[in-house]
Image 1 (cartoon, rainbow, N blue to C red):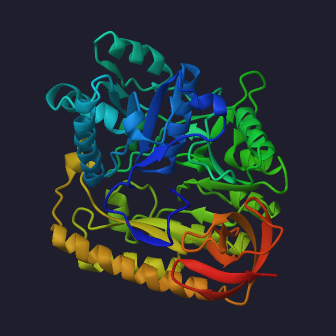
Image 2 (cartoon, rainbow, N blue to C red):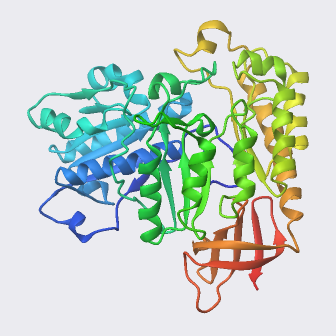
Image 3 (spheres, one colour):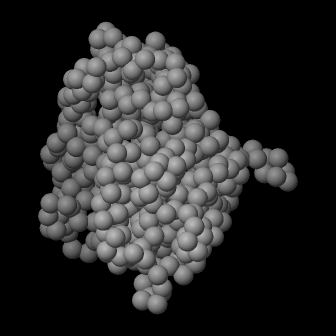
Length: 474
């Protein structure tokens, strides 16, 4: 889900945890306050949740630090999507446990998707944490911290049918001041057989659209120029006005946010093929500042495997959605999620996935091999019968094909001029800027006088790799 990742990538483990801290206010770094440190793993939703947690903590007299050794409170916002992701967090907790022994007053906690599944193991058996907080219980953090201070363990993993954190203004953590996330809904009602999200994040509920627009207006006023509307399935966004019973669909929400300002770019993630309807596509075509990019996970190119995954669409339906995108939004880039080696997948069915990558012409993909997750439908009904070496070989073939498609996709942009939003310095050289075009493609170009991050620049593309466009400002 994270739009800042590279154009093609094997994902067989969680994103490396990253420290979060705020640069928004000097009052947040007062030496008189206790200090907190957050590492976030996994998807963009987790990073967005960490910003909500930071806001709650600052309200109860904590300040952020980028140095874990200085922290009184260390929190890991966790991911459960794969076994490797959980093991990454476990290893990190063991390292932090050694640090805690040198600083006895330190409190260590886990947030997010691992909280419910491993609460007993981490609290009682391995004794690696003092605090376990589920995705819907962040408001309870002050109370839970008081319990820990009193010598008890703090735990709340209850899921909610109402919580959206709509009234909380997130502290923008590790921000470049140009791009930001806005969570528009929580939970998921899609029971994909391989996925733990419905069990770790609960049922779907949509946030009040007027609070979303207000947050977008606040961000634009603060200098942000690119926002991503986040949800497990944004296309199923639906909010009903409690007084008028007026229905707000995702297409209508997109229009409201796009109307905040023409210079505010609007992105969204993630879309589900069964809910990606033409009204959203027509709205994208109507507004220049709604970015021409859709992340539309296919997971498999084979209809039988899609049925086993309980994706509720087949290959023909998915292809119809791609055709609709190409027709209504001709310049739209499309990316995907792909799983290699799902239960009973044959070599012929694997080839269907490879052919889908080529046919759909994905600009990038997030690529996994299947990892059985306890409690899911697949774990209960299907045997994980594809040997790991076969999974890895199929995944490598998927990556190779995607790299070839990505390289050809970006090569077609050579000679074109794009409106690029500058996000900051290139990682490789402070003489170059990096930024993205509307299609979410990273563009690198030489700095020119008089422009800075947050400005738009027209860039003529002169070269391309499989992941990046290079050009010059014109």
